[in-house]
Image (cartoon, rainbow, N blue to C red; front, side, top):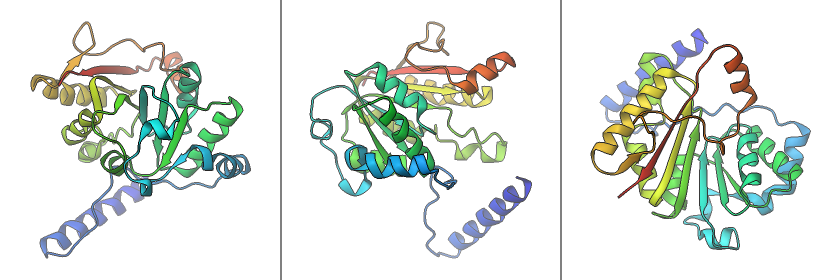
Amino acid sequence: MAEQDRTHGDTQENLANAQEQGRYIRKVRSFVKREGRLTKGQAGALERCWPSMGLTHEMGLLDLDKVFARQADTIVEIGFGMGHSLVEMAAAAPEKNFIGIEVHRPGVGACLMEAEVQQVENLRVFEHDAVEVLNDCIADQSLAGVQVFFPDPWHKKRHHKRRLIQPEFVELLRQKLAIGGILHLATDWENYAEHMLEVMQAAEAQGNWQNLSASNDYIPRPEERPLTKFERRGERLGHGVWDLKFRRVK
């Protein structure tokens, strides 16, 4: 990990030097793509399920009523990992539409494999960068909810600027949510929770959001967010998890 950090630092320095010299450098994305090897089960699920459940950035702006062949509230989850919680939420709320966005191909395969086992039909997935999907594929004011659970905390202080929950990204999410739509965030890093709250409170001060916490900070884990194995282990070890919910008000 230390060697990776040094390499990353060298790369960032090279980028900065190139930019100072006026050379074009591709914009750094909001994620690090860790490509792993697909299991046979994941590969099989991708082959079988992608034609009916897969969405691509190349499709452009989506008509969600056509994508799901019905009118229903649509929830987007950004960075669903292996997809177990997302599939569980979709199975528990068949009256809603769910879209998952993830860049990790084995995670996409695992999600589709679990959806196939549970016979979930109200779920679609992207294997693409969330910012590009939101900008190019999701219409403004079209979502009932957005959820971001356990994003990369970038726990080293010098990497905090890489955290996904930043003012610009939150403003993008606000635009995609309908008035009254809910943004649900969760993290198991207290420092990141404090950062999330600070970002959201600044946006709330502009009149854009309402914190749904009775204490104006965090909320207990909502029943609709499944308790993961990782969380159960963390609870036994005394680790905390912080949930935040904000409603778009304008």
